[in-house]
Length: 503
Image 1 (cartoon, rainbow, N blue to C red):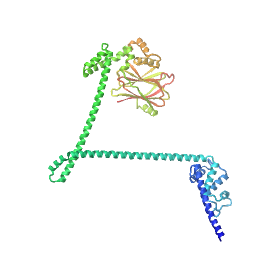
Image 2 (tube, helix red, strand yellow):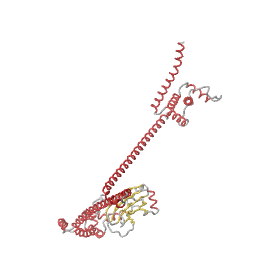
Image 3 (cartoon, helix red, strand yellow):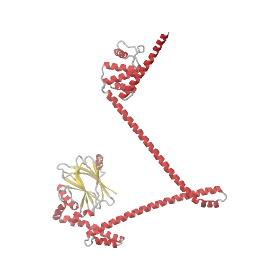
Image 4 (cartoon, rainbow, N blue to C red):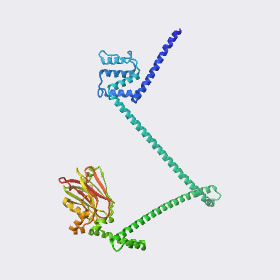
């Protein structure tokens, strides 16, 4: 009996040991799969089966035997071990069904997890694209997780920032309210006795009405005090601005006095610097400004004539009279829209520049403007572009266009350069060219207005994008926008341009 009991005990404990061993094996297998592939076993099996189902017969071409093995693993993972009693009946001619059942029976009693692992390993062995697919899915998952984490961190930071701002606003509002109450309490203490006496006279023997009247008087007094304080602060700010403007005006007047004094010393050889200094010390400020203002205007009116008559002054001291800011040039990509607008008449127009020609667009300064803007583009080819400024009073307010060939343009350029600094691209000293031109053409040199180079002529690739620029008026005169096609021997250019000014 005891031996039978021992046998029964051993027979009972044997399945328990086998079950625990199977559980341990399954856990080890799942952890190994997770370490190897980066996914849990169930999720990895679902991805493997989806990959096989979508690509079988397309990107995956397996033999009949390999397909039977994969289907057997799938049946084992889905339904468990093969059971003849629950298996569906097969027809006489169902060869494929019989082969599938045979391969399913060959798997025996392996667990569903082992069947999943067998399916994954077999698919990885037979298909080289399966592992890169899983890697891509894992990288996408990791990138999505990182993006989600980053988004969550940003949302957390934004939420914390809003909370801090709200807290700061609450603290600021609390401080303002506290200061307001402290100020109101201080004012109430100062005026309480005075308002109390007034309330007793208005409502004798009625403490409740007296308290209401005192409260109203204190509130009105507080509001009046705050209004007066606000007006006082505004007046102080206005006074500060006026003082600042006065200081700036004084500095500007001093600089004007100094510049006008220097112009007088250059225009009159009898006044040396020591005489000018003594005159500034002896005369009062307003008298000196009036005198120097009149002399300064006279010097500025005579300056262009002196520039043309005296080569030394034109070459050396012209920069003292004129301060020209550099032009701003940029580009934008909407060239087709710009051409359409200009062609439709929403602009200055379209010009065809012949080969070897140069077009000069004369744009006079406007009395109501302070800055010139220009835009231009071409079809398919580049073109030379530059801007000059002619220091002469505009004869007309209309924009005019002048076309000249290469020879005429060279003569025009020589005349334009009479009062400019040396051009490094001209191949020689500009002062020497001016001397030769003045000797050969004295009458022209005496009447030609001085011209300054704002933007030298360079070839611009304006067929890919629109060239845009602006320049602040240096004074009254005429802008010369030059479009140079003199370097082109055979090819004409179509130019789209637009010019306007800013008030």
